[in-house]
Image (tube, rainbow, N blue to C red; front, side, top):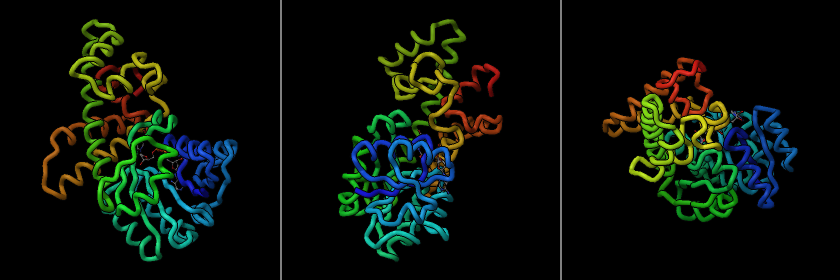
Length: 297
Ligand code: NAD
């Protein structure tokens, strides 16, 4: 299939690579020429704009930081809607608010295109391994149309319901993730300060009731999990500023239904503190630095 892919960051680059590996012809665009160059080296074709990436393709995928980027890439002067053919589906895998999804879907529908929200879970390792979970919002027909493409990048493709429900699932998942990571950071730092080997503690928690992805796959304590960002200076994972954005989405969504989010609001302040200290680009597991000051943030 001919696919346009826009946004080649920590997640988008490995996702686009998996589309190439699956035999798709992929045309890519990113503001970073280095990011585009790396994908061209892997076999992709470079486009000069979102509009060019969406021209003469059968599906367009976006993987961008936040709602403002999705809006401009979709409907800007040189945006996707300026180049796309009628009937072609646009799949947005960025994490954004459900209201923006609905507005984008209306714009796309006005010119005969589908806009499907399909945010992901699984992190950069899941993106590289092609094992992401996709949370898809849209009609059953839209889900069936995009599912084969998503299977080239993920393992679990879940239909959540109508347009925007993929983002609801994602926001709630990341509310849990932001809170659990802060909790695991607190416990790992305490254990180390009290004198237990962090590897032993991480191993015990991995088979005990404290177990979570933040413990057994992405442990924030350096050296506990070799493949986690904490073991490479908190680089290359899920940025603190992106987690801060997602907790903002969760607290805003909670406000819209007048529901409290006690722990989410507290976690939001922890990541906000990290960002204020200049650590916004570090992986979000660097939140452990609030407990264990190694001088880097
Ligand atoms: P990132 O910051 O690494 O990458 C974003 C990319 O978008 C960058 O390459 C940037 O140059 C590009 N970009 C920004 N504006 C653009 C524009 N106008 N036109 C073209 N390209 C543009 O972010 P990421 O970690 O890949 O995350 C992307 C999205 O996926 C976010 O919404 C994030 O919340 C979500 N997400 C991230 C992870 C993770 O572990 N990193 C996991 C799940 C979901």
